[in-house]
Amino acid sequence: MARIVLDGAAIESRTEALEAFAPYFPDYYGRNLDALWDCLTDFPEPLEIRVRNSGLLQENLGPFWLCLQRVLEQVQTEKTSIAVVMDDGEMNTTSK
Image (cartoon, rainbow, N blue to C red; front, side, top):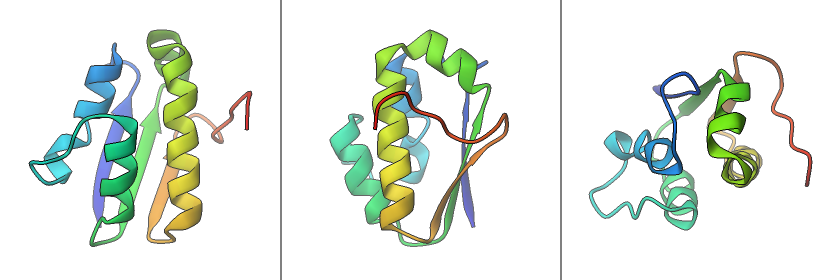
């Protein structure tokens, strides 16, 4: 199983957040939310996305964090081989 870690202590921008996925995706990964969705839904093996320090992610990414959360929630629902694990509690969005 592949594991991607999004750590709010290490990610300070949307570019860094999207870049965290790049080593696991094809070279054509466009580093935007649409490309993230496409690559996640096409991911060929089980995948765990572990989110650490989500409060810092929210602070550092602002409204982009809510959009990223929504993509992660939806892809987890769409593709059962993907699990999103929040190390500091359940994923919580203010707008669904």
